[in-house]
Image (cartoon, rainbow, N blue to C red; front, top):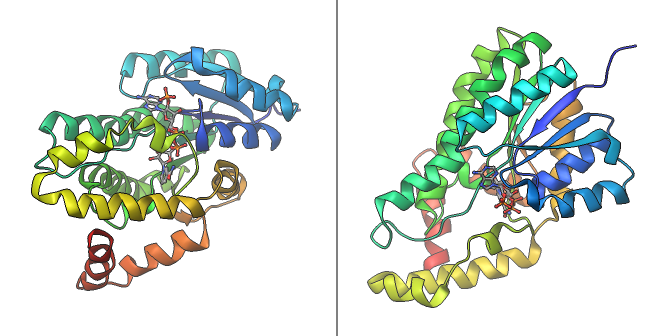
Length: 281
Ligand code: NAP
């Protein structure tokens, strides 16, 4: 009898990561649900219990911006389970503001968690994924394809992830590792709340950009009224986890597919500029 496949998921305290951990366990995978603060595992464990998959979920500490925690976590997984069959890079954080408002350090922080965190975790997991002929699935965003107003640093980081993974995919395939990116649109997770956005302070520091920022915030609030649930966003990700050979790029909703299509057929960039220009007027 072969042991169940093992998947490691980053950022499982809430949202898409939590939903993916529960769904992976329900699909029969031994699920290493990692958190940067294991004291925040209550919601995950409650959901796991509700779906009767507690025995297939193992909570471990992993902070994607701390390479030592990545190494320790992977060492433990291999010691305890003998193999790693998939990595889901899910951890990420929003960042809102235009470049003149914030500091370079804020841009670097967005890159650290959303880009370098993915690179570091993938790099550490690859030897084990080569051994298992496994896969890397990374939650990027429609913002990894279409740059969005007041999301310069966040979209830059997600574009970087898309470029990194698109470049890695054919190379990884030569050693039997599949690479997939998953692109959600708006998802009703803790993503916006975790931003801790002080709207008044943002509008004050926005100066001449304040009317555009106000228009953007109003439009974004409306777009989140049609958000997918984390469980809905996790469903295509689980397909990528279990399909014999998943595609490289997956959108999690028809809306996300249409939005990304605008960019992928927009050879001179005018369609996207017209579309997102309307968000800030
Ligand atoms: P979420 O509920 O805020 O979940 C984000 C998760 O990432 C949390 O578990 C958070 O942990 C974790 N995290 C943040 N920094 C971390 C770090 N340094 N190390 C490890 N974990 C860390 O938001 P979500 O929507 O589920 O986000 C999941 C992914 O989807 C992200 O990559 C995000 O960019 C992407 N996405 C989201 C949306 C959306 O509308 N929600 C749209 C497109 C793409 P803590 O609880 O400790 O902060």
